[in-house]
Image 1 (tube, rainbow, N blue to C red):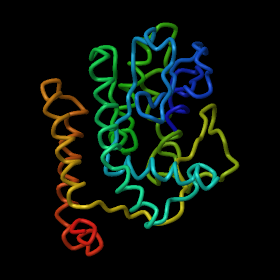
Image 2 (cartoon, helix red, strand yellow):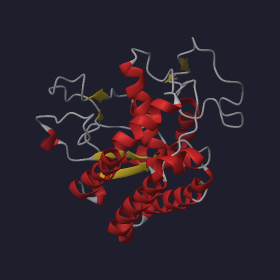
Image 3 (cartoon, rainbow, N blue to C red):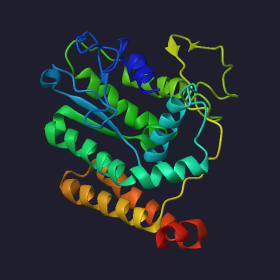
Length: 263
């Protein structure tokens, strides 16, 4: 989704750390998970002066990453199948501490190594929201346009591009105010369509009480560190905390979690 959005805004090609062989520089952006274990350190990363970072509530980001691992380990197509609950519970308890620390380290890496003028932090929740999505995409369009060799589209056209690439399946957005597009449709006008995840399987993902607490404490540390900077990131971090606090308050009614916690 993000690749196609950037390419629709700029008319330029985006790249991937795993497919660039560490050499391809002739792209407008280069997707990277670095410094997470799933990422790859480019030998010329010191030449990269600007960053576009997507951040997501770890309560949802961690299960999404596990679904990717589950698909890979079971030789399934990407974005096709969610892990079963037993697989999630086992992986969660084995990997949670590492993954929540990686979430924190990843965000801090880009916050600390790129100045506010050379980075844009985009909450996933804002990017995919039908109200905030066109607004944050306009901010991204201007950020991309400040880079060398990039001529973005006119800001007035950004809501249309967002609706086509990101919000194409919404029933009340422009221009796709209709049912989801057929799977064989790849373009609307000149804009590429890349549907989001179509995973099947159980959506519910629970954590133990100590894990909810750890998530809250971790996000609070990050929010306090960057509070003075303000902006979308701080507002969303505060929102993440509220959401997780609400969810954790329900955890005492989950018998299986109590069993895990007390064992």
